[in-house]
Length: 377
Image (cartoon, rainbow, N blue to C red; front, side):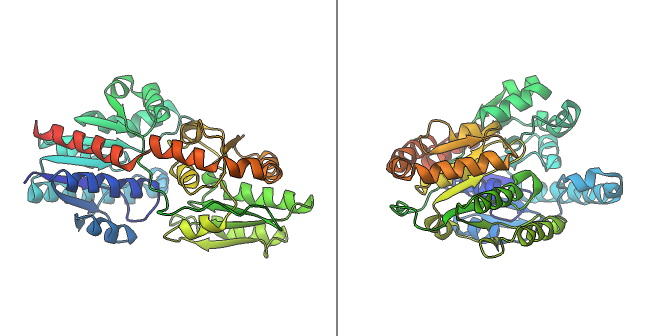
């Protein structure tokens, strides 16, 4: 039996984590013994075991912004040394036929694997066109060593092309396979009382949950009742942002109408209770799994008009784009959804049908299996 070794930088259940589950499932279905290396235990472990993978916890260098600042350099060196030793040991132990590096934030795995002349796949889930070209060159350069490169959107490939054109030319776009709820139901027929707005994702400045809080304040002050639920948690080290968010909610007098629920899985009960989903990202998103999940759950989606979110929401009659970081535009879009509710509600099934065709999990798994089989050729 051939062996595939996957390396991934975390153990949570956000966008790239969920795509790892589908990639691992594709590997198992294709007949590979599938081993997954993670830097720590977390909710992701049980999901990986459930699809038939083996999970190994190993030291790993994960590139975070905090490590790139001068005060983080000692930890960067320490993690790099421990991560290199851990990667080399596991590669010798597992002796994989293919190594699948899931995200560009763990560059040592690509290099270590290729030094062993092992077929290596890098799956790019990150793209920040607003970052400097030199920073992007530094992030993407180690993955020139990969045998093949998968990107999750045309936007991601274009971002790579601005930094390393040669790498972009040999990359392949594979749109994320997104799972929706098993039995979605249409939202309520009429908006009686407060409009129920849902945010799903990281609580971080770049994701813009504070933009939603400000939009909720504007709507409330203009006499449009709104209830906003924020489902998600912060990265370690960003606890200050959650405290700031709570203070903003209190200062706006929204403690009864804006609620923070922390990380939750599954997310479907929250979508089932919502009228509309918002994805108010401030800066580039390589794709937009959350937006697609909202469409598949038969909910209208209001998202920032930027980067990969345009690809995730494009072509659906019940998705609406607004300028990033513009609370007024977000508030106006939510009020418009409320005013046009019968029309919007009547188009939700058509949007879900289109999203299911474009982001089929079966097609995604087939594409990943093809990449893995190339290692055996």
